Length: 369
Ligand SMILES: *Cc1c(COP(=O)(O)O)cnc(C)c1O
Image (tube, rainbow, N blue to C red; front, side):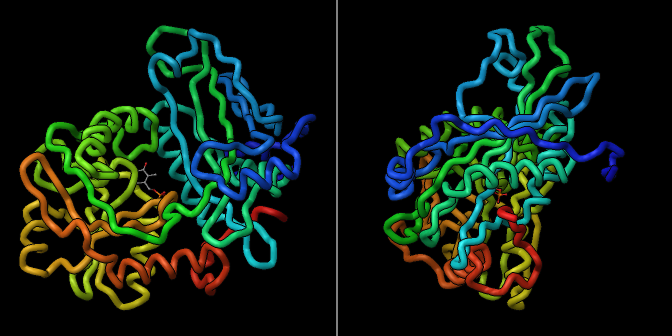
């Protein structure tokens, strides 16, 4: 038997097919206008874990509600982590995802921080292939649409005592996603939260966990009330350094230099961030990962040294930022057009993901074979 680095054999998945999958017409109607995170495919992956048996009972089953005891630990103490990646259909019909080993390892780091068990990388990869094996028809074929994959892990032990759960479950669900910018890529205004922080020193900022998002919802509402689509957070200690947005990393273009805040423990290490850094270096741009203050941002916009600002993450890929607003200030022009460096990096990255450009770094991973 083949063994993994941890010594455990790779999991075998049992399959129970959905007796009532969506009809072709129903699925086509969804894929014609998928939105984001609204519709789900016919199946889901589930793997159980217990402190005694480890990972076991890997399976594909019909998509549907979970049975959770009201005393499940996750409902009370938010012991949960998740991932987000996409399945892309190439012109020849094949289905691929992008750098999934990075998501697998990040899920392990997130799990470690939340005192959850680590799923072996190869079982994570197998779980993605399993969902595509049964729901391949849910991967859209029009350019810039995708099937968004959402792996997540929850503490589902029925126990209100405060300790790491002894019973855990991992799932993968899949949701078709249209192009993030349906009317063409438009620069956004972002809101600087001066009252709230996303992550503190020693906290969970580098983990992809639901709790971080729960804490970002109130500042997100404040952003929306001020006409902004996203929140920008500063570091919790000094309130001077730029960390990241609620769910995206941030980059500053200064001529032939690209600057992004260093991942210091309070910033989520984005796969898109890492890929942008590589593509920028390939073009001969100088990339600096370092502290970046709000003052440097303001001065840079005023002096013209900062030529473009953008945010990046799997869902929206790369989003140009036109303006940053706070309670008593704003800099940048709200109607500034998207920058050239921003848009060409976006084009190059999506061309690789959709198989329209050479995958010179070996980033693509085939899911349908
Ligand atoms: C997921 C996430 C990102 C982006 O990560 P990608 O791997 O590029 O999708 C950035 N910041 C936060 C807080 C996130 O949760």
